[in-house]
Length: 169
Ligand SMILES: Nc1nc2c([nH]c(=O)n2[C@H]2C[C@H](O)[C@@H](COP(=O)(O)OP(=O)(O)OP(=O)(O)O)O2)c(=O)[nH]1
Image (cartoon, rainbow, N blue to C red; front, side, top):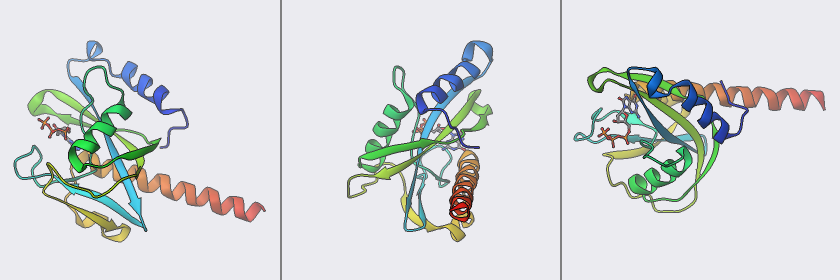
């Protein structure tokens, strides 16, 4: 599902829906970036010393206190990949229980553009640009797999809308 609201409203709605006071579990907001280039998607592999070792993910990280999701995303991508990005549409989040730490991870995908180079990894084991037909060969973290599904549906819908518009002309 795609959000038609502006990002800041989606952030607020998600916040009110999942305020920790209403739940025994803490909800951790984790914005992540989806980069597409020449029909390929960017994926990063968590290192063996990180939590979820060697799982593939969309880069990003937890929102710190006082930060917005987009501020956190700019910061995390600079910290992890050493690049500047432009942040585009926010897609529907994926929720994942993390029982070991009594929390719920809310992974929020943003479609982004890379605005600087080179990419220098500071935490991940490696990154890859993956062709669409190869994406499911990676061992994705659970929430990232759901985000991938959301993104692919979003792309399909946009393609459908564009084709319908062409037919009408
Ligand atoms: N990307 C992603 N993160 C997940 C999933 N499930 C899950 O518990 N997480 C957790 C791992 C991380 O603690 C957090 C993602 O934020 P992060 O990448 O900034 O976290 P981190 O490894 O630097 O820090 P830490 O919390 O492990 O100490 O969410 C998932 O399916 N995908």
